[in-house]
Amino acid sequence: MRRLAPVLRQDGADADLISLIKTILAACKEISFRVGQGALSGVLGSTLDENIQGETQKKLDVLANELLKDMILETGLVMAISSEEEESTVAGNPNGQFLVTFDPLDGSSNTDINSLIGTIFSILPAPKNADPADPAIFLQPGTAQIAAGYVLYGPSTMLALTTGKGTRLYTLDKTYGGFLLTQEEVAIPGVTAEFAVNMSNQRHWEAPMQAYINDLLLGKAGPRGKNYNMRWIAAMVGDVHRILCRGGIFAYPRDLKDPNKPDKLRLMYEANPMSMLVEQAGGASSTGYQRIMEIQPVDIHQRVAVILGSRHEVDSCLNYHKA
Ligand code: FBP
Image (cartoon, rainbow, N blue to C red; front, side, top):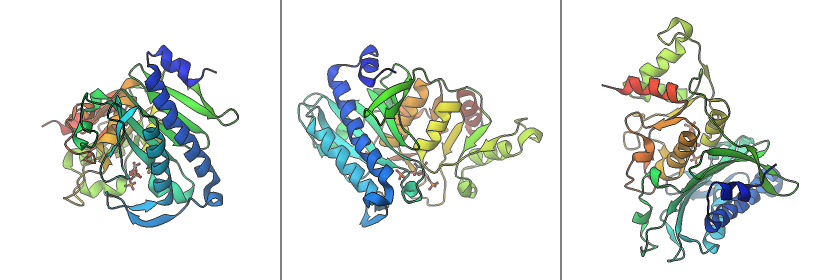
């Protein structure tokens, strides 16, 4: 089995990028160990604090955030970091050539029920001679990403990673402590009969998404002419991983439940890295009206509607959004 660094070198990644990715993964290995220990390591449960998103922080959110933040900044390769758990960006080395934005623990509602959770990260180029303390240096579209990935903490700990030369899957070998390549070329099937969405929000969705999902639910007797199955892991890393493995469509659509917060998922450290992984595996990713990777960000914590997965199924969903 091939190790990570030689594969990244083959993909043209330079020594600094490889070193940065390996540091992110070293933090994820520590998180994987703590998650695996569960209640034995006292990491379950919530803190009394709220993050910038207004969500009660889980102990694992805080632990994962501190590990990643400290280890990434210690490399000296990074001008600044941005995290779901940090109100603003955190400055690093003014001469750092990279910016890293991350969701230290995706699927927080799953931490205390021993279900799938993960870490999502995105690496951007640092603008030359910029102010490391200026959050605006992060406001680059997803197409500017140098690398994107997630680590899934499940029965096995797995990594999905792209540096723009395709999406590859690795598995953590806990005996020697390194990630080994277990799937070289991920290719998402264009057609699928599996969808993932939180159906409990259906009544709040916009009309196009209501119509699209209703037609899936009509199955063979409906306009789509086939039966669809549904899955929902309530952790984006888990739902996207299933799609990388066997296809499908995932959606967290805009809903009008709270008009002040119509979208749930965050552009910079959830939607953009997942979109790069999916597109590099032959899939598609959209808000319903725009390719997510082409969105010009206006805020490091901005939220967007997400529809991604098997290309032909995403196209079918987008047809419902056309005027
Ligand atoms: P965080 O856990 O990082 O806040 O992420 C949001 C998330 O958990 C996604 O991973 C997941 O797809 C979605 O929210 C689940 O939402 P819901 O609670 O509506 O099912």
